[in-house]
Length: 324
Image (cartoon, rainbow, N blue to C red; front, side, top):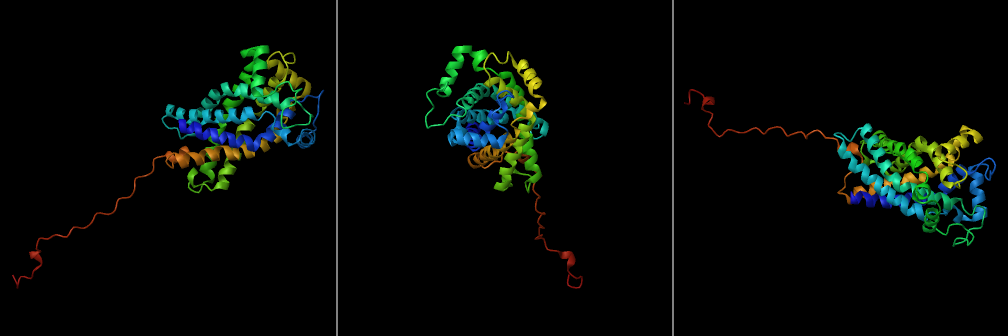
């Protein structure tokens, strides 16, 4: 379990760095309203962030998710592997869905405040020229400062843990789809239905496919979560108020806003996350494969045919009678 945590930690850092610019664009599009519409689409958002805030603007608040998501990935992979012991046959899609849901629920407790800090930092200083150090007029100077100010104003439940229920609603179905999707890809496209035998390009494609499936299932909840966590206290009274106001003022399409950068983000992020985890596990964990399909009982090897024994007793019955 400790090795699973370490492998997931390294994979989480790799995936976060690869896909974070797309995550910033996603959050900007999710949280803008019709009254304060700053971006006409994904490409317009990319261009404006780069022109107004430089390339560093894409990486606002990355410190929190870089280490936070790394810890979360370590929790997800270790809990998911440990929960396989609850099932007599952990190789089925049903078992993988249940173990993924358990892992998603456990990590949501830690993920929620990390997402809150990330969202608040991504939303501050929009349109301001980004320097190597945070601007002095920024509300939050960093992740720790953000947590302190949120806690001092609203406490733990209404402040730091704001949006916890939405994080549960997003991550439980997301990870319930994540692990079966990876297993489906391995069984379908691996030459031997084994993860260890897949070439690198298939592993990267499999990771991207897995991330796309997970985000497609949970994306509407992610939109509401981002809007609820980024808003000030007087905008939405509670989660239900956020859902009703968002749909009433902007229509049902608000639940899919920012999906394109989210899909683009899922490709590099997940293309590196799970394959890196699988590679580390195969390398340092005795060469075993992560795919549960590899754990199926193989037929026993064929035994060689029995050797014919040559008798040393004289065959007297073969001697002609005339000689006897």
